[in-house]
Length: 124
Image 1: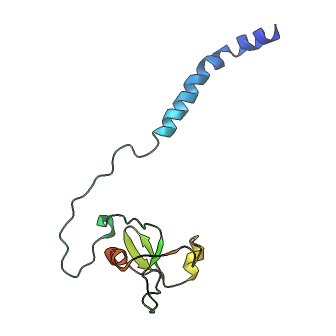
Image 2: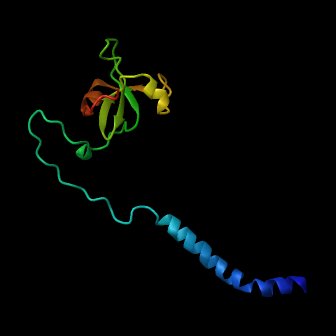
């Protein structure tokens, strides 16, 4: 008898609950961008000018710390890859401030891979 009274009292809620849950699931699944990001055609860059970061394709090392192999001072420079460009990290305190475990997170990549990544502005 008690269960029947509870079911009668909350019948409307039981009827709408699946619809509410389905609506929440659908809105969570579609909360990303509603339209694809437009792709812009590359434009000619004058000789010696830097290519804008927006047109640089992402690197497989995106958001990773990289350096070239070797033991020279130039080889020991560590770069972070951001927006498809390698950026020399000048100040070592930047690593910890941005969640990197230095030197463990540094990947030594081949000279060919390193040279294939365009150079961006250094991080001070």
